[in-house]
Amino acid sequence: ALRGTEFEAGTALRYRLSDGQDPRRRTDVQLDLNHRDYRLSDEARDLAPDAEGSDFAFSTGQVTLLRTGLNSGPEMPFQLSAAVGKTWYGGDSYTRYLDLGAVQQVALPGGKTALTVRSGVRRQDALSPRTMDADSWRLGFGVSHVFSQGHRLSVDLTVNRSQSDAATLDYG
Image (cartoon, rainbow, N blue to C red; front, side):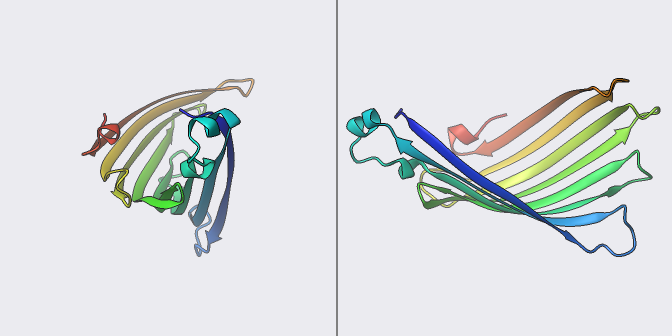
């Protein structure tokens, strides 16, 4: 491991698409960009004179289509998402992916407690010999409660599973 300083910058832009007559349903397009770069310490440059901080830079770009609305009234909001993205490592193309997700929330009687179910799948294609393809899925459950003072307590459990020929991407 080489010592250095990490620099990170990112932005998220969201645009609301027109949805016509129903104000309870909306569709947004979101663009997320993120870049991490490094400056190696003098000690690190002495240990690895041919290495540069940009060799370890990591960037992501993602476009997401988000559909939110209500099922059967305000106590059952949902969100559907479809995202396409690409990553770069050391300035070279690394992966591209497609991610589909769904979230359904249900408010219990009284309105202070809500249950949430989340699910999703992702297909990742390797664009570099440094990584491999991977298929993954996730399933999550959560409960949140708002107390009379306005404090909120949330507990979430998520299970992730990934299948790949690369040991670091094969888990679950």
